Image (cartoon, rainbow, N blue to C red; front, side):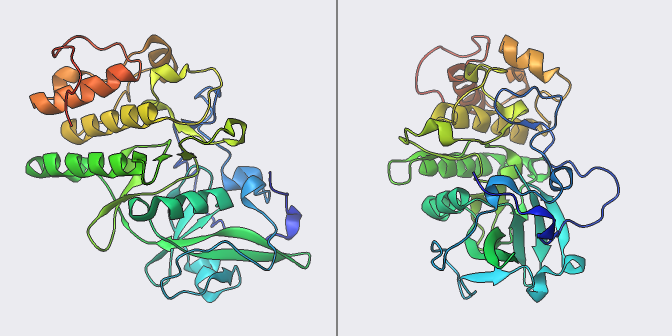
Amino acid sequence: MGTGTGSSEPRLEPAIDGAFDGAKGRTTPGQKSGRAGPLLPEEKGLETGPATKEFSATLPGVPSLGLPPTITTEHEMLIPKKLEVLGVGGSSYVYKCHGDLAYKVNVTEREVDLMTAAGDCAITPLCHVLAKIDGAWWRRGLIMELATPFDFKLVPAKERMAVKDEMVSLVDRLHSSEIGIAHGDIKPDNFLRCHDGKLRLCDFDSAWLLGDDEVEDWEGGVSDRYLAPSRGYPDTHGPPTIVDDNYALAISVWELFTGKDALIDEDIEDALMEGKTVDLDELEDEDVRTFVWKRLRDGGAKVPDLVPAQDGGGK
């Protein structure tokens, strides 16, 4: 766990009207969804929890792509009035800053390590942001590549199959033996279109290295509407698995092809405990319906036998 930094830590959260709740629908393990996810920065005050860590002179490597390995919160591009809120990740604000870059606050060393290990599957981390507090340097955040949010409702019907295949390929690569990571929070909001045209994933604070036995170290959050019933909501559960990611991917694909937000009108707590999920009849394409059906079933959802109950349905 990190160390609290007290009132001397620089505060970069902008003044905004009303509650900016980009983490809505996201909860910590075993937490009922009436609470909209982890504490937001303004609720934490100046405490940054495990994301704030004192650094020695040696920092873990980050692909800088021309940027210095580290900058500080005093850097001119991090002046609060120059920052534009892009959204809220699992634990912190994400800003747009000068130079077509993104700045995420409260990024743990573990998240950076997993982003780096994910390689071409993840948004590129560019450099660390440090704050000097009481004479010591502390991790404050991360500068990342700026990418375009993926809005499934804007994808033309003729392009949906190609986008679906791209999403599936991306998640499969992340799960492959070459990388071996479960993302833990697969949903359309966490797919971004990068400058080179490729789709990549962001928000790795809930991710998990497959095969890691130190399960008690996982403290990620989950997005309720994409949570597999097999995880046993609302009981405390461990880190994500491939099955969990594939279930969330199936919900995301359903949203892509229907243009609707999944389970938005449901009492999500009741739906999760009852194994209720999306309506497969809203998917017109048989292959897409089979793909979604198989992964929903594997994730513990109570789905009608709309297609032959056999393995290999869908890609």
